[in-house]
Structure formats: structure tokens, C-alpha cells
Amino acid sequence: MNVPLRRIVIAGGGSAGWMAAAALSQALAGTGIAITLVESEAIGTVGVGEATIPPIHGFNQMIGVDEAAFVKATGGTFKLGIEFVDWWRRGEGYFHPFGRYGDDFGMVPFHQHWLAARAEGDTTPLGAYSLSTLAAMNGRFGLPQGDARSVFATYGYAYHFDAGRYAAFLRQLSESRGVVRHEGRIGDVEQDPETGFVRTLTLEDGRTISGDLFLDCTGFRALLIGDALSVPYQDWSHWLPCDRAIAVPTAAVAPPTPFTRATARGAGWQWRIPLQHRTGNGHVFCSSFCSEAEAEALLLANLDAPTVGELRHLRFTTGRRTTPWAANVVAIGLASGFLEPLESTSLHLIQSAITALLSWFPDQQFDPVVRAEYNRRVTREWDAIRDFLILHYTATERDDTSFWRHCRAITVPETLIEKVALFARTGRLLGREGDLFMDASWLAVLLGQGVIPRGHDSLANSMTPELRSKILAAMRKTIAGAAAALPPHASTIAQYLHAC
Ligand SMILES: Cc1cc2nc3c(=O)[nH]c(=O)nc-3n(C[C@H](O)[C@H](O)[C@H](O)COP(=O)(O)OP(=O)(O)OC[C@H]3O[C@@H](n4cnc5c(N)ncnc54)[C@H](O)[C@@H]3O)c2cc1C
Image (spheres, rainbow, N blue to C red):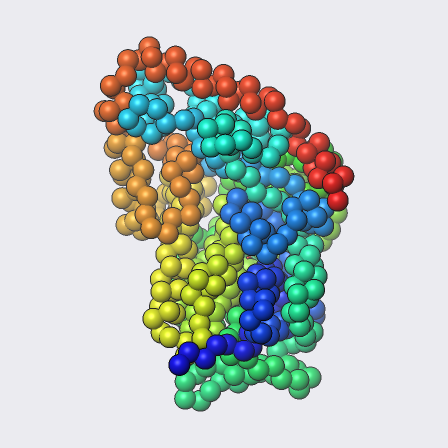
């Protein structure tokens, strides 16, 4: 007989812990399952993680968050994509937009017509067909609207927000739904000697917290999945060599841009994330090619406003746990692995793990088949994102520093080789199960990093160049008109603040 769970214990109260608490308290309301969270203020949280991607809407909806209240509470701004500067070559940039390019017509995807037009001598950049790109570059943002045929429904959006305020916001929500929080440092993890299942956490002051299911949200410490269960960590540094970051906030001196900026540097890259009340900045770099002092100096020399807080130094090893769910422990957040924030995917991976856990929710038996399926799905998504990130570093013409020469020589995973080779030959995009990033994202980054297809789908040639050119011109006009009609980003934020 299936015996349902009675007690879930969440170890850790960073973004991962509180996102899990908020989602589980909503999804499991009425089941009688008690949810407890333990965190240590003395240890604190990683305190970064401020740029997101569009699926965050689904998460906020699932946990019952009002968008205006969320934007107000977290100092949030809207995000239409990421501007990449100096990645392919110094002095060159591109935009990875949330949303699609143009509209499919004829027998082939839109971008095949763009490639055909290019072969016919048209030099219009792909971004001219992306409402999100044009709006972002002009500092405009309004909510997508209309039915799927409307040009105003061709883009998506996400948020930038203050990580500390987000955790506090979710804590309030979770506690109002009955989640019980314990303040204290976990000193000991007691396991069943036969099964290895975790039974009890003992805090340093002697209090004990027992449970049936444990979520390890203890960040890089990975107290349960790593220290207690010894689940191996797959190190991906040979593909993604950056291993350090320095973060610092600066004053908000101009209206916030509706996009994140990622600027390539000599041994890594720098982020710029505009919030309402400040701007988040950070330098991600590889310690084999750049010292902490050099990295810090480079970051401070490349800020566009005075600093308003301390520098934070962070260390990480890119990779993931081989099995994020082992025994009765599910690792979520940094405890499960780390992918650098180049495409703002970590908070998404937390949300995705929570959703997968709810789809494969265990009972007291902890059926290994359920666990295996969870692990298969979750790790597949990690691997697909990993490939996407590697592309940014390896498809580059930069050879001006030893770091970039090192990146160019990296042997990339087979899965990425196939994808890039097919695109380079035919302009076709190969989708796979578990992909988070869809065709438009790959297209933006492949082209932006200088992977220009040698050919295109011959079915695009079933249309005359004149007719294609007419259709493309009409599309550009509609998209440019729509972008110009959107309100300034700052006034949309003001409207939200007013609505609360
Ligand atoms: C440089 C950098 C930039 C990033 N940028 C982004 C971004 O732009 N977008 C994005 O989506 N993600 C980003 N991330 C990732 C993001 O910050 C994390 O995924 C997210 O904050 C989740 O962290 P966490 O909750 O897993 O860990 P943490 O925030 O470290 O929380 C760990 C929790 O465990 C508790 N804990 C640990 N040990 C104990 C113990 N012994 N007893 C009791 N409690 C304990 C701590 O007190 C804390 O509450 C970034 C990460 C880094 C390193």
C-alpha cells in the first residue's frame, strides 16, 4: 500500500529553499504534509541571482504571486533579453531576445527566408525582425498582449530583482501558508544505517528535526547530498573554465534598461543587471588566467556608477551532481550543481527541479523508478543548458588573450558538435528532448557568435526574391512600428508601483 509522506524538511533558506517552500506549501495545501525549513542567518545566502528567464512567470503563477506586488517588493525591473558585447570579436555585439524572429511563411521557418535573402544580398540584421530586440535597444517595455497572431504577442519577458528581497518575499508567503522556519546551524545529519536514508537533522544547539523527504538547499555546502550521501559531482570545468566571480552593486543613476548586459573580458565576462534601486554588477572569471586582484581592478574600472555596497568574492566549480535525487534527499539550487549565470538559468533550474518533484512526487516507499525518471529529466535539462553556454565561449574569433585561445581549443560535447555542424551546413536547428532554449535562442547566439550557415533550406527558393523581399519589408515595418508604440520601461515600472 502507498503510504503518503507526512513531513518534508527543507535544509537551507536561500532562493532555492524559499522557492521550494512557497511552491510546496501551495501545491500540497490540504494534504496534511508538514513543511519545515531550517536556515542559518550566521551562514547567510549566496546573495546573487538576480536575472531570470521567462518561465519564471509560470512559477510565480503556480505559487500564487501577484505580479505588481512582486515587482514592488523585490525592486524588480523587466527583462527582454541579454545584450552580449565583445563575445564573437571585440567591438561586435548581439542581442539574445526573449521571443521569436519574424513570422514563418511559405514552407520553411522564418529564418530560412532571412538566410535566403542574405544570400541574395540583403544585409538587414536578424534583430530587425525581433520586437523584443528593438524595444530593448530603445528602452521600451509593455506587457505582451493580444492573441498569438498579434505582433505584440511575439515576445516574452522576465525580471531582474533583488535576490535578498525575493527570498524575504517568498518567506513571508510560505510562512503565511504554514511553513515552519527554524533558525539555526545544522551540525549533524543522522542516516538510517541500513538504507542510508536521512532521518534527522540536529542543530548545533541540540534541537532535532526529523522528516520523510529532505530537500538539500544548503547551497555550495551541499550538506545532505554531498557530505552525508556522497553523491559524486561531475566537474565541467574543462568545458566551462570560469571558477570565480566578484559582485558589487552600483547606484541606479539612469532609468533601468529592460535587458541584462554580458560583456566579455580578457579572462571571463562582466554582468550588468539594472534594478529599480541599484544596479547589480559582477565579473565572472577563470582563476588560471586572472588573479583576484586583476579581476577586481577590471570590474571597478568598468562600472558606470559609484559602488553602493561591498565587493563579494565567490568561488565555484561548474558541474552537477550525477543524481540530484538520492535516497530520500533531493538537492535543489546550488547544492545540485552550478552553471554560471551567463544565460540566467540557475533560478530557472530551481523552479524546474521543484516542478519535476511535484510531477514525480514520492510516497514513503520512494520508488527507485520514480527517482530515476526525475534524475533523467532534470539532468537532461542541465546538459542541454551546458551545451548552450559552451557555445558562447567556443564559437569565437577572439584570440587576444590566453583565456580566449584556451576557450577556442576546448573540445566541445558531441551533442553540441552535431548541432553547430548541422546549422553551419544547412541553417537547420536540431531540437532535442529537454531543451530549455528553443530555436530563436540558438539562432541568436549561433549567428551572434559568427556561425553563419553556408546554405539554407532549398524550399525557401520556391518564392521569388522580389516577393520575399516585399514580405520581409512589410514585416520589418510592422515590428518597428510596434516597438515604437511600446511605453518607456520606466513608465511601465511606475505603473506597476502605482497599482499596489
Ligand atoms: C556569481 C553568481 C551569479 C549568479 N547570478 C545568477 C543570475 O543572474 N540568475 C540566476 O538565475 N541565478 C544566478 N546565480 C545562481 C543563484 O544565485 C542561485 O541559484 C540561487 O541564489 C540559489 O542559491 P541557493 O539557495 O541554492 O544557495 P544559498 O543562497 O547559498 O543558500 C543556502 C542556504 O543554506 C543555508 N545553510 C547552509 N549551510 C547550513 C547549515 N549548516 N545549517 C543551516 N543552514 C545552512 C544558508 O544559511 C542559506 O540559507 C548566480 C550565482 C553566482 C555564484
